[in-house]
Structures are given as structure tokens and as C-alpha cells.
Figure 1 (cartoon, rainbow, N blue to C red):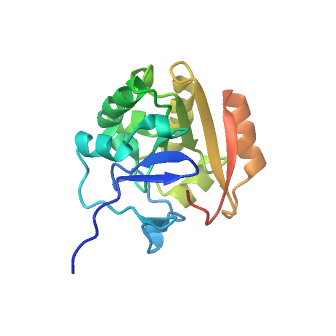
Figure 2 (cartoon, helix red, strand yellow):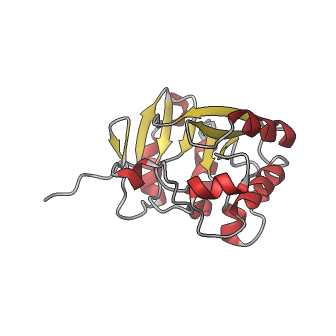
Figure 3 (cartoon, rainbow, N blue to C red):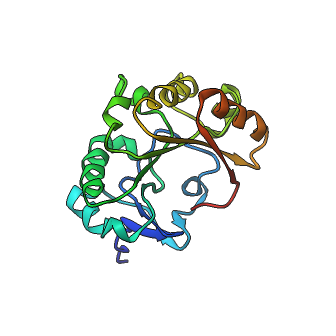
Length: 202
């Protein structure tokens, strides 16, 4: 059976999304790929190998055609952080507005504070908070690395110095998740908040 051509770039809501890895730092119980589907709005996003920088640039197209260029697939883009930053720099130079969707665990993965590297590369961060406390987070997001929840909060706090716009998100509909409490965490950290809806991806 012939494999489908991998989808690296796809367009939703006037934005160009870049799918650069299928690898992830979490195993979220609500993620489509752990529930039998790699599709987002009809786009099959499973990658059997990470695309090269030139493949990603080709998939991005002309960034001025879109409101935003967003690093987001069904994997964690910061596992390829320096590829992200290379592409972001090139697309910014072409007039693109760059958003990075992330689980906020890059500092934990790299073992150091990487947030200064985002400066002048990333315009906006969307960070998946997903729960108001560590216990609820661990139940739904199933992080293999200990200390993930606190590392996420620390990442957001540090990133404020280097990224102009930061939004925390949480999925409404997950058992035990208190959306109002999640929004309060965002307010306390001095960043924006967006409620997502369970089952709606993209």
C-alpha cells in the first residue's frame, strides 16, 4: 500500500500551519493521535520522518499571504527548536507573523532556559496549560518527565521577557479541569487566555 505524501503545510482560518514533527513530549489522553486519528480538518498529519528546513520553507509558501504562520501539528515543535527558530527567522524576514504552539516543556527537555533564544524570532506563543493543578495535568497530559507542570509555568513566566504575545490555553470538557481557575493562572502570570473545546482540533 502506497503511503500518502506527508502534509507539512496546511491552511486553516487564514493561517498557514507548519507540521514539522510527529514526536511529542506528552501523551495527552485527549490527543487525536492517541485515539486512532492523525487528521486535523481533513489533513493527515502523521509524519514518518521529520522534514528538512528546505521542505518546511517550501511548505510555508509566501508568509504575507496569511495572517500568521503557526508551528503546530500533532507533535511538539520545540523538539526541533533550532529548526523552528531558523525557519521563523527566514519567514519573519519575508514579512511573516510567527506563532509557536507548544506544551511549554522546552526548558525541561533541553535542561536549560531556552526562552532567550525566542527573542526576535517568535512573535507569539500559544502554550497548552490544560489544567489548573499538577494532579489534573498529569492525569490528562501524562508527561513522562517529572516536574512538567511547574516547568511549564516557569517557561511562561520566563518567556514574557522575550515574546511579545503569550496565550495560555485549556480544553473545556476534560473531567476535573476548571477553566475559570486556568484563566486565573494566566492572569496571575500576566498573559492572555483562550478556552478550547474538547473534540475540536484546529
